[in-house]
Image (cartoon, rainbow, N blue to C red; front, side):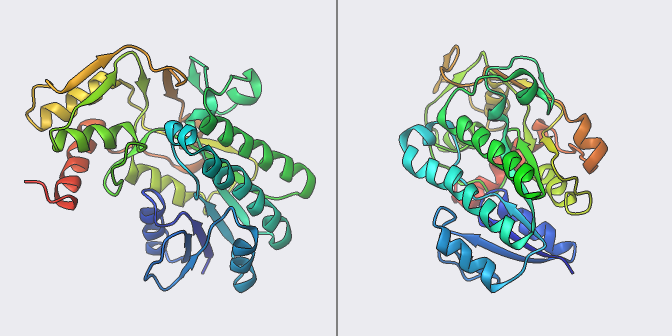
Length: 305
């Protein structure tokens, strides 16, 4: 049996990942911020070294999925102190403990590291072409990838980096800082206005597809590699909004259409060829199926008729 720790294991990706790993027979522990009734649980702030140190003093882990982080561009601007502490300092803490305890790590990065790059995003682009990250959140994720690469060079630590492309689906609770799919679905379901930056394009990924590939990494661990986890479809943001409106039979009167959002990547088109070869990645759920699943989960969760 493999002992695994998932930081951020109560989150929109961490919670279903924990379930998936347990279904495969792993012994999974979770570290996160809130109080929780789960048995194998550590209440812990990853930005606080001594809190995190106690976790690793209590148990030896073979693998750590380090998902704990502050999420989102606007969140990173409005709460930059929290974001930098959680993302950059938290990862530094994890790397110090990885050096001491020798666990293998899977680190959750982001498509935001591709910054202003406008072509198909293969994993070698950031180091090869050096795109400029466009906001604090993006910069923090690239800082973390650099920290990981440096630790591997200095201490022979073993880490795989994964870059999520617009993962969405059931389990993501609404806030103004959450994903664009979450915001469109929630606000449409509640008859609230929202705006669409119609010039932007994205690769979207249904959460079950993301989680299945993440769980595969334990079986196909290649130290030092980076992988895109994304769907293979490519949509503009107006198409996404139309799918939400069509499913809810709404006319879009509450939608304001805008051009380009400043300080945000215009186009994110992922290459997943490497991920398919190395990790048996499959994008099984297209956006046309994922949007109804997401809306129906929200309808039940928020008790909306």
